[in-house]
Length: 398
Image (cartoon, rainbow, N blue to C red; front, top):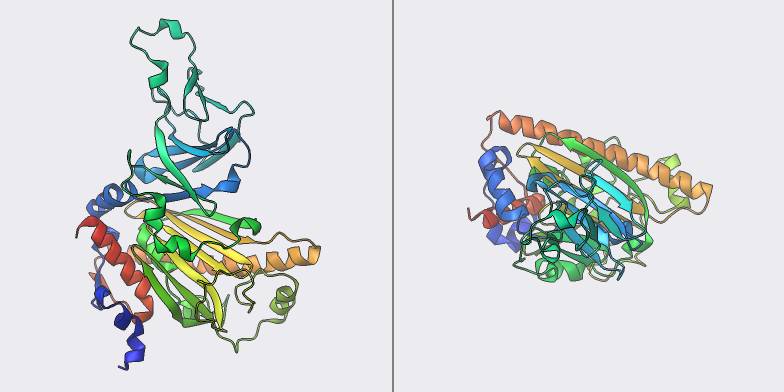
């Protein structure tokens, strides 16, 4: 085999080329270790800064695998803070959840537990306790605020860390990944299409399915026929994080309808575009066939950027074989009916492709749990997946 066919194995020899054991995808015991040694210790992306535009706005994010939900609230000083959604009285949730994400607002910038009416301000302090005089002399209101969760913001993305004292700052955790993706106008492209479902698969199988382009000619033969190359470009590993470029097949012709849509609005990844808004770190080789940057921010967040488009996937573990998938696709808001139609057309194609991707995940899980195979075989262009399992092993001490 020519060396060029193993270019990533040559560039990253530390990842090896051996088959990868499947145990971490089917073992409840290993899953429990992942929760304790990864999800309880690293920074997790839980939202966007613009979801909380005004003081008193709040969002509750349920984290199933960590057996908690986190309140994100914007204070009167403009700072977004995080707290466990647990009242200091008898532990009831302060904000009643209506789903995995719950939004609300208080003009008074306070949050009240509906069980007994304890009231907290946006810094987590108790500001009112009904019948406080009936509590014993040892009761100290100042010592009974909400339990804080370390919270920080990078490029408009809100992160939390469940360690009482995080071992790394968010900047340290992001490392060079933070600089690589800084400067893209995420907030300007705020017209979004959002998807959400439960999948019967391990969280890593979900991440893996969006971490290579080897599958595009088969799984996406209907939605994106002959549009993307199976080869990656500019692969970079940033500690536990990873990124690469996905490339177009320049000789692919759009359908007549897609051609009309692409001429009206930038909403489709299959249309070649310029690079006026891309930071210089994106597509550093200046490839003419560049489509978008595909990255994985460890452990469970995939960020993709292209000219006029950015989108994310996030896989939240619920159990060793059950996962929540959140997919969000962002473009510039349409200004005309023609642009709106074009964006809707582009998103229908993208939605179909994502449905094609997610359909494989449950099949993979079911097949692996059958015991028929003990390992998976990865080719060179699946280098991001190989890196993923290497990083998980490192965090587990395996």
